[in-house]
Image (cartoon, rainbow, N blue to C red; front, side, top):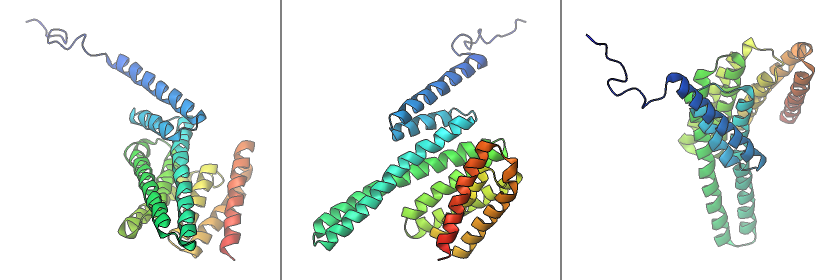
Length: 257
Protein backbone atom coordinates (compact mmCIF):
# COMPACT_ATOMS: atom_id res chain seq x y z
CA UNK A 1 0.00 0.00 0.00
CA UNK A 2 1.16 3.47 -0.82
CA UNK A 3 1.51 5.88 2.06
CA UNK A 4 -0.71 8.95 1.91
CA UNK A 5 1.28 12.15 2.07
CA UNK A 6 0.07 15.59 2.99
CA UNK A 7 0.56 16.60 -0.64
CA UNK A 8 -1.57 13.71 -1.82
CA UNK A 9 -4.62 14.95 0.05
CA UNK A 10 -4.12 18.54 -0.92
CA UNK A 11 -2.45 19.73 2.28
CA UNK A 12 0.97 20.38 0.84
CA UNK A 13 1.93 23.67 -0.71
CA UNK A 14 -1.17 25.58 0.41
CA UNK A 15 -0.08 26.09 4.02
CA UNK A 16 3.28 27.31 5.32
CA UNK A 17 5.28 25.01 7.56
CA UNK A 18 5.38 25.59 11.29
CA UNK A 19 8.80 27.17 10.83
CA UNK A 20 7.53 29.54 8.17
CA UNK A 21 4.44 30.41 10.19
CA UNK A 22 6.70 31.20 13.13
CA UNK A 23 8.78 33.47 10.92
CA UNK A 24 5.65 35.23 9.65
CA UNK A 25 4.50 35.75 13.24
CA UNK A 26 7.87 37.23 14.18
CA UNK A 27 7.72 39.56 11.18
CA UNK A 28 4.26 40.67 12.31
CA UNK A 29 5.51 41.30 15.83
CA UNK A 30 8.46 43.34 14.57
CA UNK A 31 6.18 45.42 12.35
CA UNK A 32 3.75 46.09 15.21
CA UNK A 33 6.58 47.20 17.51
CA UNK A 34 8.17 49.39 14.83
CA UNK A 35 4.84 51.10 14.18
CA UNK A 36 4.20 51.48 17.91
CA UNK A 37 7.53 53.30 18.25
CA UNK A 38 6.59 55.67 15.42
CA UNK A 39 3.19 56.34 16.98
CA UNK A 40 4.84 56.99 20.35
CA UNK A 41 7.25 59.54 18.87
CA UNK A 42 4.29 61.17 17.08
CA UNK A 43 2.36 61.17 20.39
CA UNK A 44 -0.53 59.30 18.75
CA UNK A 45 -1.19 57.06 21.70
CA UNK A 46 -4.47 55.53 20.54
CA UNK A 47 -2.64 54.15 17.51
CA UNK A 48 0.30 53.06 19.65
CA UNK A 49 -2.19 51.23 21.83
CA UNK A 50 -3.63 49.41 18.81
CA UNK A 51 -0.18 48.34 17.62
CA UNK A 52 0.73 47.06 21.08
CA UNK A 53 -2.56 45.16 21.26
CA UNK A 54 -1.62 43.52 17.96
CA UNK A 55 1.76 42.58 19.45
CA UNK A 56 0.14 41.07 22.56
CA UNK A 57 -2.31 39.08 20.45
CA UNK A 58 0.58 37.46 18.57
CA UNK A 59 0.89 35.20 21.61
CA UNK A 60 4.60 35.42 22.42
CA UNK A 61 5.67 36.89 25.78
CA UNK A 62 6.66 40.56 25.71
CA UNK A 63 10.25 41.63 26.25
CA UNK A 64 10.90 44.14 29.03
CA UNK A 65 11.00 46.96 26.48
CA UNK A 66 7.74 45.80 24.89
CA UNK A 67 6.18 45.45 28.32
CA UNK A 68 7.05 49.08 29.08
CA UNK A 69 5.73 50.19 25.67
CA UNK A 70 2.44 48.38 26.31
CA UNK A 71 2.13 50.16 29.65
CA UNK A 72 3.05 53.56 28.18
CA UNK A 73 0.57 53.25 25.30
CA UNK A 74 -2.40 52.66 27.57
CA UNK A 75 -1.23 55.09 30.25
CA UNK A 76 -0.85 57.99 27.82
CA UNK A 77 -4.11 57.24 25.99
CA UNK A 78 -5.86 57.24 29.35
CA UNK A 79 -4.08 60.31 30.74
CA UNK A 80 -5.37 62.49 27.90
CA UNK A 81 -8.93 61.54 28.74
CA UNK A 82 -8.54 61.83 32.51
CA UNK A 83 -7.30 65.37 31.94
CA UNK A 84 -10.21 66.08 29.59
CA UNK A 85 -12.71 64.89 32.23
CA UNK A 86 -11.18 67.20 34.85
CA UNK A 87 -11.33 70.14 32.42
CA UNK A 88 -14.97 69.41 31.55
CA UNK A 89 -15.89 69.28 35.25
CA UNK A 90 -14.18 72.64 35.81
CA UNK A 91 -15.98 74.22 32.85
CA UNK A 92 -19.34 72.84 34.03
CA UNK A 93 -18.80 74.35 37.48
CA UNK A 94 -17.82 77.71 35.97
CA UNK A 95 -20.83 77.77 33.67
CA UNK A 96 -23.12 76.95 36.60
CA UNK A 97 -21.60 79.70 38.75
CA UNK A 98 -22.11 82.22 35.95
CA UNK A 99 -25.73 81.24 35.39
CA UNK A 100 -25.45 79.41 32.08
CA UNK A 101 -27.20 76.07 32.71
CA UNK A 102 -27.35 75.16 29.01
CA UNK A 103 -23.58 75.46 28.65
CA UNK A 104 -23.15 73.51 31.88
CA UNK A 105 -25.22 70.70 30.35
CA UNK A 106 -23.03 70.71 27.24
CA UNK A 107 -19.88 70.44 29.35
CA UNK A 108 -21.32 67.55 31.34
CA UNK A 109 -22.37 65.83 28.13
CA UNK A 110 -18.82 66.12 26.83
CA UNK A 111 -17.54 64.75 30.15
CA UNK A 112 -19.84 61.73 29.76
CA UNK A 113 -18.57 61.11 26.22
CA UNK A 114 -14.93 61.14 27.33
CA UNK A 115 -15.70 58.92 30.33
CA UNK A 116 -17.18 56.34 27.94
CA UNK A 117 -13.91 56.34 25.99
CA UNK A 118 -11.97 56.08 29.25
CA UNK A 119 -13.93 53.06 30.44
CA UNK A 120 -13.44 51.42 27.04
CA UNK A 121 -9.66 51.80 27.32
CA UNK A 122 -9.68 50.37 30.84
CA UNK A 123 -11.79 47.43 29.70
CA UNK A 124 -9.44 46.66 26.80
CA UNK A 125 -6.34 46.89 28.99
CA UNK A 126 -7.83 44.57 31.60
CA UNK A 127 -8.96 42.09 28.94
CA UNK A 128 -5.45 41.85 27.46
CA UNK A 129 -3.91 41.52 30.90
CA UNK A 130 -6.32 38.90 32.22
CA UNK A 131 -6.57 36.85 29.01
CA UNK A 132 -2.98 37.00 27.76
CA UNK A 133 -0.30 38.73 29.78
CA UNK A 134 -0.90 37.58 33.35
CA UNK A 135 -1.49 33.89 32.47
CA UNK A 136 1.62 33.79 30.26
CA UNK A 137 3.99 35.62 32.63
CA UNK A 138 6.96 33.35 33.34
CA UNK A 139 8.65 35.11 36.26
CA UNK A 140 7.78 37.08 39.38
CA UNK A 141 8.81 40.43 37.90
CA UNK A 142 6.52 40.13 34.88
CA UNK A 143 3.69 38.69 36.96
CA UNK A 144 3.94 41.53 39.48
CA UNK A 145 4.15 44.17 36.74
CA UNK A 146 1.03 42.88 35.00
CA UNK A 147 -0.97 42.37 38.19
CA UNK A 148 -0.11 45.93 39.24
CA UNK A 149 -1.28 47.19 35.86
CA UNK A 150 -4.44 45.09 36.11
CA UNK A 151 -5.16 46.66 39.49
CA UNK A 152 -4.44 50.13 38.12
CA UNK A 153 -6.95 49.87 35.28
CA UNK A 154 -9.67 48.49 37.49
CA UNK A 155 -8.89 51.42 39.82
CA UNK A 156 -9.16 53.96 37.01
CA UNK A 157 -12.51 52.45 36.00
CA UNK A 158 -13.70 52.65 39.62
CA UNK A 159 -12.79 56.34 39.78
CA UNK A 160 -15.28 57.18 37.04
CA UNK A 161 -17.93 54.49 37.51
CA UNK A 162 -21.02 54.75 39.69
CA UNK A 163 -23.01 52.38 41.90
CA UNK A 164 -22.54 48.65 41.35
CA UNK A 165 -20.08 49.19 38.51
CA UNK A 166 -17.81 51.18 40.82
CA UNK A 167 -18.06 48.56 43.56
CA UNK A 168 -17.27 45.77 41.10
CA UNK A 169 -14.24 47.59 39.66
CA UNK A 170 -12.97 48.39 43.15
CA UNK A 171 -13.30 44.75 44.22
CA UNK A 172 -11.41 43.55 41.14
CA UNK A 173 -8.71 46.17 41.67
CA UNK A 174 -8.23 45.05 45.27
CA UNK A 175 -7.95 41.40 44.19
CA UNK A 176 -5.34 42.22 41.52
CA UNK A 177 -3.27 44.40 43.83
CA UNK A 178 -3.36 41.79 46.60
CA UNK A 179 -2.33 39.05 44.16
CA UNK A 180 0.51 41.28 43.00
CA UNK A 181 1.66 41.94 46.56
CA UNK A 182 1.71 38.19 47.19
CA UNK A 183 3.69 37.55 44.00
CA UNK A 184 6.14 40.35 44.82
CA UNK A 185 7.20 38.67 48.07
CA UNK A 186 9.81 36.72 46.10
CA UNK A 187 11.36 39.99 44.87
CA UNK A 188 13.53 42.51 46.66
CA UNK A 189 11.41 44.93 48.70
CA UNK A 190 13.35 47.74 47.03
CA UNK A 191 12.73 46.53 43.49
CA UNK A 192 11.14 49.46 41.59
CA UNK A 193 8.23 47.30 40.39
CA UNK A 194 7.57 46.03 43.92
CA UNK A 195 7.65 49.58 45.28
CA UNK A 196 5.47 50.89 42.45
CA UNK A 197 2.88 48.25 43.22
CA UNK A 198 2.86 49.16 46.92
CA UNK A 199 2.56 52.86 46.06
CA UNK A 200 -0.42 52.36 43.77
CA UNK A 201 -2.11 49.89 46.11
CA UNK A 202 -1.86 52.37 48.98
CA UNK A 203 -3.28 55.17 46.80
CA UNK A 204 -6.17 52.86 45.86
CA UNK A 205 -6.83 52.07 49.51
CA UNK A 206 -6.88 55.75 50.41
CA UNK A 207 -8.70 57.27 47.44
CA UNK A 208 -11.10 54.56 46.27
CA UNK A 209 -11.74 52.47 49.38
CA UNK A 210 -11.43 55.50 51.69
CA UNK A 211 -9.36 53.36 54.07
CA UNK A 212 -6.62 55.68 55.29
CA UNK A 213 -5.16 53.47 58.05
CA UNK A 214 -4.60 50.42 55.78
CA UNK A 215 -3.14 52.77 53.15
CA UNK A 216 -0.69 54.13 55.71
CA UNK A 217 0.24 50.60 56.76
CA UNK A 218 0.87 49.51 53.16
CA UNK A 219 3.01 52.58 52.42
CA UNK A 220 4.95 52.47 55.71
CA UNK A 221 5.71 48.75 55.43
CA UNK A 222 6.87 49.14 51.82
CA UNK A 223 9.11 52.07 52.70
CA UNK A 224 10.71 50.44 55.75
CA UNK A 225 11.32 47.13 53.97
CA UNK A 226 12.84 48.92 50.98
CA UNK A 227 15.33 50.81 53.18
CA UNK A 228 16.85 47.49 54.24
CA UNK A 229 17.06 46.07 50.69
CA UNK A 230 18.21 49.23 48.90
CA UNK A 231 21.98 48.59 49.17
CA UNK A 232 21.62 45.36 47.19
CA UNK A 233 20.35 47.11 44.04
CA UNK A 234 22.28 48.50 41.10
CA UNK A 235 22.89 52.25 41.04
CA UNK A 236 20.19 52.78 38.41
CA UNK A 237 17.64 50.65 40.27
CA UNK A 238 18.47 52.47 43.50
CA UNK A 239 17.70 55.80 41.85
CA UNK A 240 14.33 54.50 40.59
CA UNK A 241 13.53 53.01 43.99
CA UNK A 242 14.39 56.22 45.83
CA UNK A 243 11.99 58.22 43.64
CA UNK A 244 9.13 55.88 44.52
CA UNK A 245 10.14 55.84 48.18
CA UNK A 246 9.93 59.63 48.20
CA UNK A 247 6.41 59.44 46.76
CA UNK A 248 5.45 56.98 49.49
CA UNK A 249 6.79 59.35 52.13
CA UNK A 250 5.03 62.35 50.54
CA UNK A 251 1.72 60.47 50.63
CA UNK A 252 2.23 59.40 54.23
CA UNK A 253 2.85 62.99 55.29
CA UNK A 254 -0.27 64.11 53.39
CA UNK A 255 -2.46 61.38 54.87
CA UNK A 256 -1.32 62.13 58.41
CA UNK A 257 -2.43 65.76 58.28
